[in-house]
Amino acid sequence: MLTITHDTQLAAVDLGSNSFRLEIGRVVDGQILRVDYLKEAVRQGGDLDEDRNLKPEAFERGLKCLARFGERLKGFPAEQVRAVATQTLREAVNSDDFIRQAQKILGYPIEIISGVEEARLIYQGVSRMLSQSDEKRLVIDIGGRSTEFILGQHFKANTTESLRLGSVGWSQKYFADGQLSERNFERAEIAAESIIDMIGNRYASNQWEVAYGASGTVGAVADVLAGAGFPADKIEREQLDWLKQTLIKAKTPERLTMEGLKEDRRAVIGGGLAVLTAVFDTLGIQTMHVAYGALRHGVLYDMLSPEHATEDLRSASIARLCKQFSVDMEHAQNVSKVALYFYDAMQASDTHKPLLQWAALCHEIGWLISHTDCNKHGAYILENTELMGFAQSELHTISLLVMGHQGKLRKLAADFDNQNLVCQLMALRLAVIFCHSRRMPAIKHLQLARHKQQFTLTFPAQWETQHPQTRYLLEEECQLWQKLGWQLETRQA
Image 1 (spheres, rainbow, N blue to C red):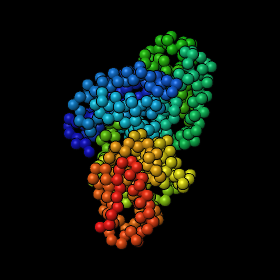
Image 2: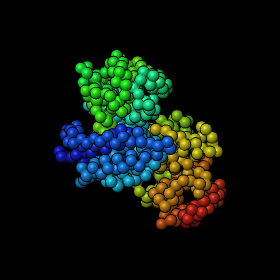
Image 3: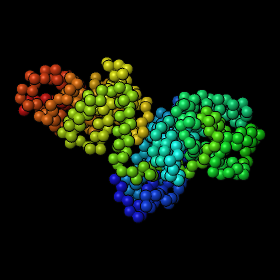
Image 4: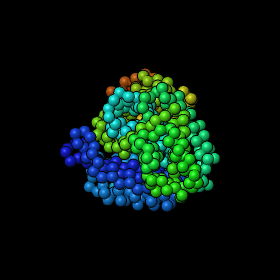
């Protein structure tokens, strides 16, 4: 929990596909007023090679930018800084290598957030900078490699989606010849419409009252239109056709001399405009209002939220996922209670308890596909889903725990030198064993102790004879841990 005083400053770092941004704000009466803002066009989104690795030059540009941000942030307490990375680093195969180096240079942790979490934070930023009303809002943010769609009201995002289309990706794919031609625009718009069609019904015009565009492409297009004499606070559908014809007349990005067009937007304006036009046409938008909030503002306001509010959001996301895959919640809650009981007995880190609890609740989401391999299917679902409130690293840990809740441990791609992870796995696997009959077991007389790499489980007298199946499962479990250099022993009190 943050302690807010009259001089508290918060900082948000946004590692976007086209630009990296640093926003520093001071908290005044629940509002965040800008103190400083830094932006650099790093253009990582255009520097993924054919194997989806960040190229060395993209690495270097990103690290140099973060070094400058790190100098500005020097002295900020860790709890007053949050850094998030978006689509390019979600896609990049070598993103872990970049993040590892970037965190050292920046001096603070960096989260790669999921698309729907990005969408939620965008809405937080946009809604905080709009006058409050009861209107149902559609918020669109076209970034470099992804576009976020949000339906919300007041400060709450109700429906979120993130699609892999953006100004950088579309410019590289459909304007690769460097020509702003009618043919290239047609191909780009049709391709974008085919993707947006997948969510068209959920975001159709009968689902919202006012459409807003945030940051990225919308801001760039609005700046160009304002430079040409159109109103600065909104974009009309017919203005997009005017802008497209103006670009076509210029023939190439290098020949564009439009007022309001920033240099870092010149090369990607074609792809961005094609995506924006497809958004208007597919969702039936005639007028889009320009919003001034963005992802970085949402990150700042999210830091003001009580810690339990974020946990409640993540718990709600897990609950929806369990419902979607018809999880037996009574059994899941029993496993969760037993897992937390064993975890507490190990005196392990409280920081990691929520991830264990959520993993226990959704450990059977793969049952709908296959009972035998439910751990594999469940892990796949979690690795490839996007849940509001979660960073990708958190979903990866939950996925790893779900994968490891049953079966052989040696095949699990986990770091068994990580004691917190081992404690989580041990607690979850023991909970699954003790709940094998799908009833809540009597556990208050069981004792689990940990010393370095050894776990000792102690039973009361007569327990073994009363629970022969559990005893058999525990004997197998002891053998599995022994193969990894950890010891699980059972004994009678």
